[in-house]
Amino acid sequence: MSHTVTVPFKVRLYELDSLGHVNNAVYLRYCEQAAMEASESVGYTLEKYREKGWIWVIKHTILEHVAPAFYGDIIEVTTWISQITPASTFREYLLTRQGDGALIARARSRWVLLDAESGRPLRMPAEMRELFRPNGKIAVRDLKPMRGEKPIERAKVFSHQRKVQRYELDSAGHVNNAVYLNWLEQAKFDAMASAGYTTAWLKEVGITIVQVRAEIEYMKPAVEGDELEIISRLAAMARTHGTWEHLIYKKPTGELIARAWSTGAFLNPSGNPTRAPEELINALIE
Image 1 (spheres, helix red, strand yellow):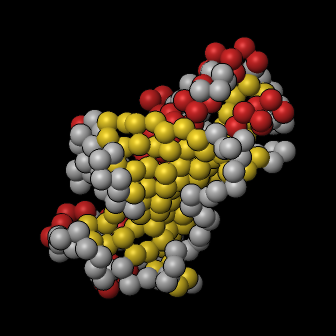
Image 2 (image 1 turned 90 degrees about the horizontal axis):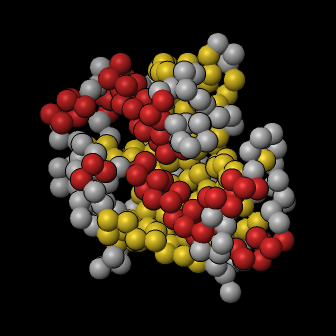
Image 3 (image 1 turned 180 degrees about the vertical axis):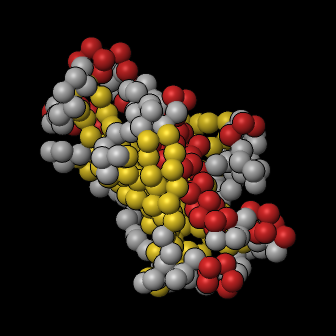
């Protein structure tokens, strides 16, 4: 029998974004905490990891937004291990609302166990493999681009500069993986604004863009003070949604820190899918 744990989270006011919904980055933080509590439930606590000199890091994550959550909702995160390989552990997540059981989001992360001092990958001990008991069930699959989208061959390329701040770091001194999701969302809106289409313009025409899917591959950690460049372009479009590709580089070395894809859905004032504004899409294509 697989090792499955469910952890409840009550939505706090400060976890809402400008739309009044729980921000997707918050869901990733819920998933991280649920993963830690799942580990603790079989005796692998944070203190035990520190004693052994081990640390878990995420190398790849996918989050799919299904329905909005609001202030006061209780979100239950159910998590389990689907697969263990010599180099990686794949953890799955289903986020549902307590009460009506509505599916809010689903996610999948590839975790790697490292020696905290050297940074070298470690093979998961047999005892841990037995305790976590993978079951092969996958919550969300790798899918780039999303269904119905057609690749865009000649999209404009936008550049966004940022410096890593101390408040963006986790306990390992690296940028927390959920922070990247905030960066991607901001980079997308900055790109549209630089093309002349601001969030104020979207509001005027009665359109909201909701990030419904994100996939991030983490290549190198980013730390406090790093100067980064985020390169973004619209990679694929369907009638009511589009997927952006993002490359995050460390300056001045040019090291690739992360590669990501984020999909935004266009909604009308009633919250239903609507056609993407033609003038906006034209402004993002060469």
